[in-house]
Length: 239
Image 1 (spheres, rainbow, N blue to C red):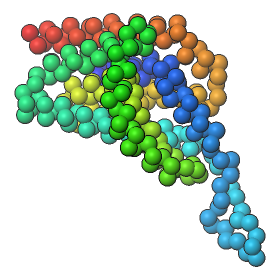
Image 2 (image 1 turned 60 degrees about the vertical axis):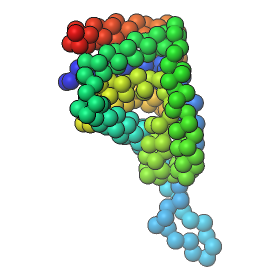
Image 3 (image 1 turned 90 degrees about the horizontal axis):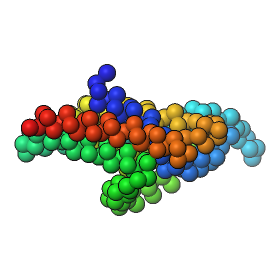
């Protein structure tokens, strides 16, 4: 497996506590809002009788909106990867320079998850204006009574401003490749999946452990050395 893709998956996994804190409210809201039954469009009312209903597979809908979320990550990764290729080929920015930039963000992410230095809050603020324009589209997917609506809602959710996402996007940028950029964000999304599925399904004991400060700080101490190592390697390539 490509080391950048593996690193992105690792970032998603170790950022589980942050995912639950950041997206836990959204996940809980979406899960609790899922209906237990929906109207069956194949049934035609006769003599003013009520349209029959059929049961909804909540698990399938939960997977659908997570698939939509990860699909958005992949799309953004492809866009950023393509931007990196333009920067490298047309502007002449060296790939090693982009990798140093992504390594620096990985260090900042570790400090952010450990709550030692919160500079990534300023980065999240940059995406809030875009989110304000995109988020109203979610009303069209509510109530979530079909897989299509669940996918749509998840796709919108994927644009939520998040320091964890933005930090991983710098790896997609440094890849300078549209396919690799999409792959990096795909595997990042897969890394976040266990934590958010755990929250959706209701394993509260696991959730409580993931959000504990000790767990988050331990995971932060995994990312910081990885970021430092990546920075050193990129620096040596640069000079």
